[in-house]
Length: 191
Image (tube, rainbow, N blue to C red; front, side):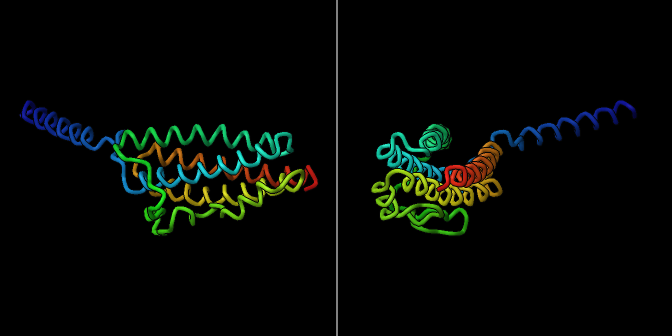
């Protein structure tokens, strides 16, 4: 009788272990929110690179120069990471004419994602110089980052893969911090 009980317990433990292994979430499949977030945030980050480069091209000695360089450094790194995940998932980057943010239940054109700046706003930055350019860079990037925070918060709660949820959560936190830093720089510089 004791041998039969031990055999039954062993079978139960084996079956439970096999089920656990089959449902191990360390390699979760990519879901709609994972892919949508990665595609949309790449486009969002690329506009941040454009904004920063416009500022630097026209104001190489401007007071916001270190902030613009920081945007380029960190967002280029983020783009590489997001592209690697898309490649792993076997998915292409999103096309420019697609509908974005459907994964959040908020479908819009790519250029209408929260925080995306209009061509007129970018032209305004391109024409600005001196303290006006510094202030405009901080205002534009604050608006841009807050739109990114909205999307990253959405991915942090909707993505299927833990690593993407964590990435999105850290991104949201970092961009919130940068918005605070921009506000402090505006006050410190008397802009």
